[in-house]
Length: 386
Image 1: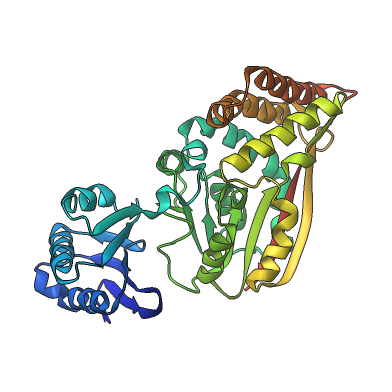
Image 2 (image 1 turned 45 degrees about the vertical axis):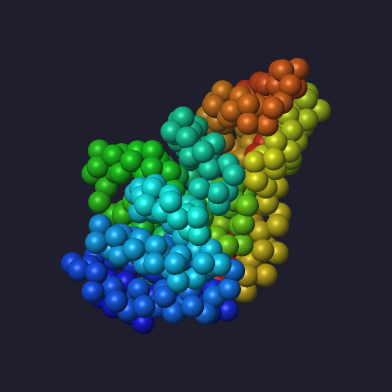
């Protein structure tokens, strides 16, 4: 069933109803097909019925009331049935409103999908990350601008940058490659606010910044020629789910472009043992938070498994001989200053190990700055054709 502004789909095999788009009824009667569909699905379900609102962009008060009244009625009609309502933060306050309205209904459970999608969400999306993200882009872009054409990016394309962070990569692409359309999406509200403000200050009108969930994008199928997701898949519990969404919005023949890293392959000299131990510990700590910072070498396999072809792979190795040593040192110093202590708190590391971790990163900073030293950071690049 469908109606203007929204779609409604029943998946009997999964005991699930999915509502997507915008619910803006002027009267509850306008939602009769949706409400009857939910009732029919409940009658056929056993155990749990899932009401999936992950792709709902807008829900007005009349629509909300109609859904809640239907959920209330189903409790009396099907006393053994649990109804799980799955919301997303894309609709502000949705979980709170549904939770409050159904608090007295033991048969209704409300979850916010993107709250638990990756355990590191609050850690990664912190506004304190903005300065070091800016530093990273400055040193990566001078190499990546030459890599992108080899992976299919050309002028005039329709492009989406998913998990865009603070939006600086999208802004640089807009100026360098003049895309016909460029949509940049991130789940961090502070990052999107920063990106939007900077674009306005720079007079940049060619990028559309949006808040959204990378695992459930509010974008149409087959829309973009080039879809990028940079230094992000490694922070998700379910990178394959993100990859499927990137492929969904990419046109047949278009390309999905990824960059990731391998923390344990970051090296430095002198004091290689100290430096190596610290990055190994950072990788281990991130595993506790649901991240895989060793995902870089796994990208090609993941792309094959997802069904992409014409897979292209290369390595950008940033080091103090091909990159500004001072800027590179600033990036590593910002990791030490902005990330490490948050990770220590989140994982319960001992104070002795915390000091050793700081020492290893400081050794890397000094190796990068030394005329006789060496420090590197490998970034894995891969793309595949849809």
